[in-house]
Amino acid sequence: MRQHAVSWPHALSVCWRNAAMYRRTWKLNILPNFFEPLFYLWSIGLGVGAYVSEMSGMPYVQFLAPGLVCVAAMNGASYEVTYNVYVRMHYEKMYAAMLTTPIEPEDILIGELLWALIRASIYGGCFLLVTMAFGVAPFPRSLLALPVIPLSGVLFAAIGLAFTLRANTMEFFSFYFTLFLTPLFLFSDIFFPLAERFSGPWLLLAEALPLLHPVRLSRFAFYGAHGAQPTAALLLWDCVYVLGLSFGLLLYARGWIRRRLTA
Amino acid sequence: MPTSPIIEAVGLVKRFEDRIAVDGLDLAVPATECFGLLGPNGAGKTTTLRMIYGVSKPTSGAITVFGLDVARHGRAVRGRLGVTLQENVLIDSLSPIDNLRVFGRYHLLREPELSRRIEQLITDFELGSHARQRAETLSGGFKRRLAIAMSLINRPELLILDEPTTGLDPAVRHVLWNEVRALKARGTTVLLTTHYMDEAERLCDRVLIMSNGKAVCEGPPRELVESRLAREVLELDCTAAEERALLEGLAAVKTLRSGARLFVFADDVGPLALRAKQLEGAAGRSFVVRPANLEDVFLASTGTSLETGA
Image (cartoon, rainbow over all chains, first blue to last red; front, top):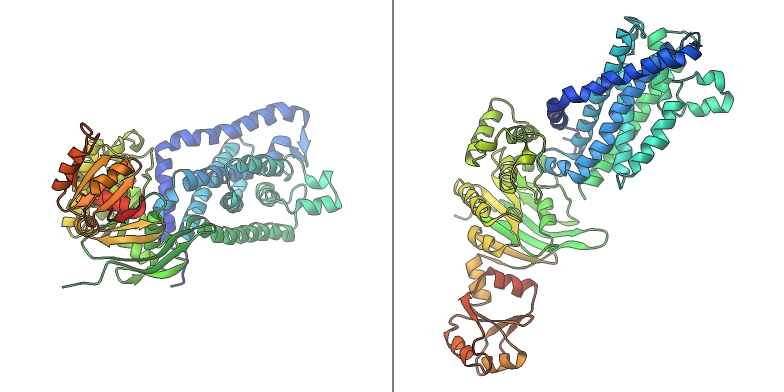
């Protein structure tokens, strides 16, 4: 057997550990996931929507919904792989204990990735459910956005894990959230169509933003070729971007988790 | 009949960027024995343990556990041993039962075997009365017992204990010692680190004293004491001049000084005690006569210098 190959049963046992903790508190944990979209719908639908009646040819609240589903998944994954992974690694010594068993660092990486994916799916899934329940997302067509949720989750889990494994103090995470995730939130086609406000080189630069890609996929899943009219090539590029970057960063994180845990 | 050792390490070196933690250590732990790795903080004990269960890679040297090369068969080796880390790693929000369950999963234990094993450990470690409360509400002693129980979930042939009783009160230490003895009686090999010499003397068949990453001496505790020092020790506070007067004319007596305190080792310190009583100005000054112990060997080996003769 190849050395340092991932053992899936062991990776699942790492994921199961987080699930066992979550299971005790899930009722409390899941509640905010239902309130968050309600607040958005309330504020944008009743408030902002009264001034901004349309965006890209649809009611503003409908324009926002697919992007916010991706943001929910992004946040779900990000909290898990930043603060929580850091605390398990450096304060709780949870990984040190796991490594006294047949678990290897690579299994821990994959286990945490799987768990972040589950959390992202719970966040994003709740958001989608609520928007559908209030008639903001078209039913059943917007169910097509379901696969975009884990896609968004895996992308931000990979980015976050790579970052966390290089972080030397917890303070770095406030940079991560305010200087990285917040601009992504604001400039990824969620609140306004980038193509209508920027041009040429700026649009090319925007293609580098990770959140843009799941958002475009999600909006397409919701409304099809409506408004900005993404081409098939563009949607393919979105998928390639998300999977390629996730894979690359996970390879990077794999090298670092071994260095971090086996000194 | 001599069997091959459970753990065998040869020429073990671990170099970190700025220091050498383990510096050419040889180690052989026989099956079903309790082996103690002793030494002051920073001697390299924990680093040695981490290399033995394969989570830290030696800079050079080789380790086999159960006859397997740890560098190549880490998973297989760790499946057959248990480790209790220095710090208790528990999930605070879960009960002892759930903590054991999570840990059992790491070893891929499945029902119904997992539940049977948990029940057994709860009984063995007398955790029943606290089995369903959150781990964070347990006392220090119960937390430690749970941590040890967790490392036994896979019925290990080898149990590694990193400072099992540090910070615990005497009653709890006795309970834990009994548990270690019971394990040994059932055929488990135990490797422990400690800086409590009394613990090592009570539990260990063999000890190895480490200092600065090197082995200073090794052997059964009683043998180490008698061969390296003597059966008894006389302890008192005195000046260098008084020391000379006390030891005058005595051939080859081993002494050890720690500040104002002088330790004199002899198989029979009776005559010395008489002299000490007659020491000028020593009247009413207390001195102690006691059996020499591992503490003395430890001090002599790692701290204060040991001189032969006066």
